[in-house]
Amino acid sequence: MLRTKMCNEVRKTDVGNQERLSGWVDTIRDHGGVVFIDLRDESGVTQVVLHDDKMLEGVNRETVISVTGKIRERGEDMLNPKLETGEVELFAEKLEILGPSRNQLPFEIRESRETREDLRLKYRYLDLRNPEMHDNIIFRAKLIKFLRAKMEEQGFMEIQTPILTASSPEGARDYLVPSRKHKGRFYARRRRSSSSSS
Image 1 (cartoon, rainbow, N blue to C red):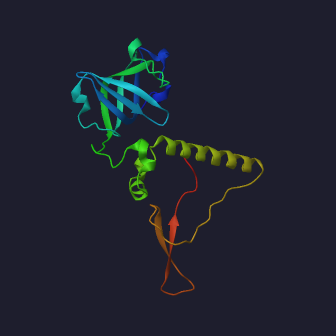
Image 2: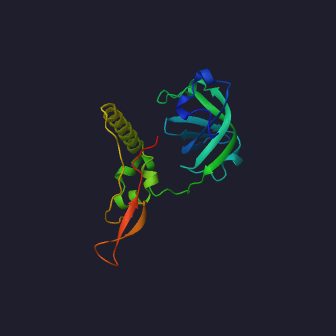
Image 3: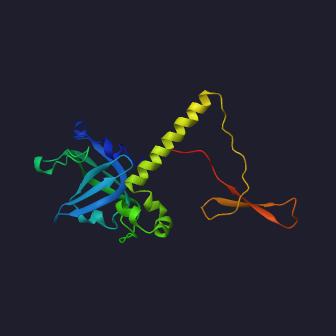
């Protein structure tokens, strides 16, 4: 199990509980002996507190980590009203790197929309972490799910048929299909799934 809760689910009612959170390292703030990490997943952000610098080895921004520890209430001067989890923090006892990240990112995640398009496409997996892009993806998935459900209520059936089209480097796998009409020629059949996952 990679988590016991999503980052944005942690509340004051969880104080004292042992929890495991997983996500991307959004920011790292070193306050001399105490390190604060803002841990982000698709639901939101939770502050993680580290008292052992060794736990930070190999951890950079956008590194995917899993952190286990107890939920504590923040002090009065440490509250963050901008976060839904701003009253609590996770005191890290164990940190595991699930996916390493380079120390130098090609662009700032939150500013990816101002980055050159070719760079955004090259690092699409980073661009999609931009909160605005992420919200658009979720909205699109919910809209398609809603429309699909309404169509099914009306008795429509969704089917998938093979599509013959020009090959493009979008990441889908191409299969060569011999042409019956033009001997010695082939079509590139792209295999892709039209179903969405959440």
